[in-house]
Length: 304
Image: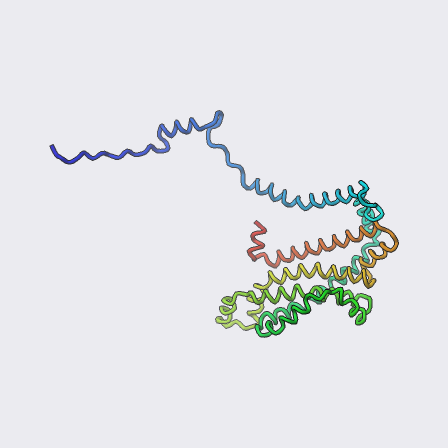
């Protein structure tokens, strides 16, 4: 007899189709079920979540209207100073129905458009130039930081002396205030362009103007569009402010006239109209930004 120990054959585990696995499946299954519970549809849950998120702003608006309706009717505030929300909206609806609001709206939008357009014409080339030349960037930095915090309202006396109390002053104030966000965003957007991309374009023999159009400006475009959205709101604010203070034609002038004639509901209705215009302009700027930046990662993430 040999002294070699007998080799034991290792046991192989039972496969998933063996009898033990079948017993475990039968024991774990619930009565009336033939298999595992169904997995919920991820797309359906996501669509419901998206619908809920889109309805949230509307819910907030409804709650705000109810709050402004409740406060004066409950006697917490005198209705002579804060009428109910329904009275404000009714007065605004009358202005829309008889068409008397459209001329002031057009005058306000005219000052906004001219001011924002002038700001774009000044800030885009100047910001691109300063951002492209490092010595110019360092030399102009103190001047920009000095002029940027100057309130545009403080320039109203200067605007009246130079242009009078008409459209020109409104455009000047709107353009001055709207220039700085676009200028700074353009400047820092150009400074933030990847130097590797610029050097690669230079190594391929691409001329400086084409590098500016094909490399620098596309990379700085997200910054520029952010500045345009901010400047759009700022230009509208300054246009209405000029109409309130200087008496230039527009919604601000009509708000002041309503205040002086004690038409409180109309005054609040016109204020709501300025807010709706600002909201609409911001929506248009956002849609333009999505259109121009459809290739940008931030817009692709938002589209998912």
